[in-house]
Length: 213
Image (cartoon, rainbow, N blue to C red; front, side):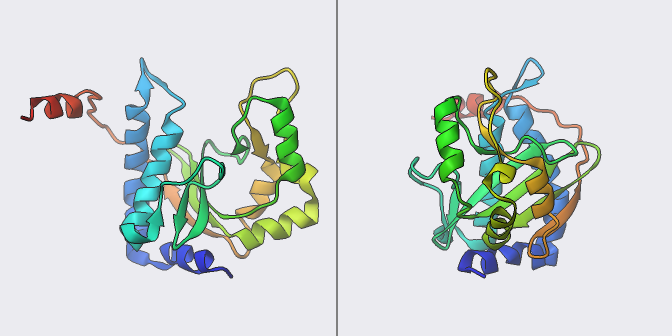
């Protein structure tokens, strides 16, 4: 088990933090949707806001000095580093495990190049958001990913976009992710994604800042 694996797993062994995640994460991710909405529709930028919320959780647990967020774009799948080790943060709305991106690209050639060269290289924190129902917050260690990747092969692990469509990315297959979340090395916090009544004004914070001298 790598250094990251042993440290990330601490989140899933901290009873007090587990209860806080169950209670606070649905509220915070609902705020992210409200902040990223216009005319009732949630925009693409919600993914970045969700990612920041999870990175903030890492900072809260492990301290700002141990979480690196200013990463080069040459590491497309890495969203943060914890004690120097890379972590990928993935989120998904809905009951199943389909549609989770490994890389965002609209270029068919780049997608194929990615499939041909891809190999799992970092731990994953995966959040399955299922409003008004059960979902989860998962830790999927690199060791579980590489073991499955080698067993089923890249064609069964990676789903390329269909020719002529614009799906914006290369996905991990539903079958692969479904297997990974129940792997003996993976961890899960079950979450009831309760929707809360929130009064939210996207301009209020900025108006307050304008009022300051």
